[in-house]
Length: 62
Image 1 (spheres, rainbow, N blue to C red):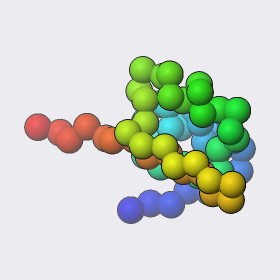
Image 2 (image 1 turned 180 degrees about the horizontal axis):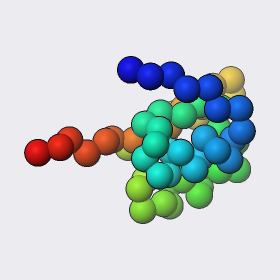
Image 3 (image 1 turned 135 degrees about the vertical axis):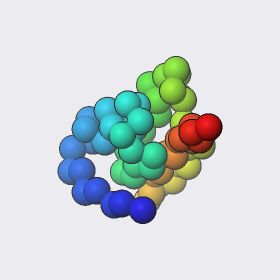
């Protein structure tokens, strides 16, 4: 498991959408609709007043 610190929200979102990251935290509430409507939609979205996380299911190689 690799943890990468990414200070910019836009960079975290781009990494999530491109598949570079499987999980991201500290997403602005304004971005949830954009992410939920994306073709590579996350498998789960957790919303909280103090913590927000997204996770995407990575394809398993055959």
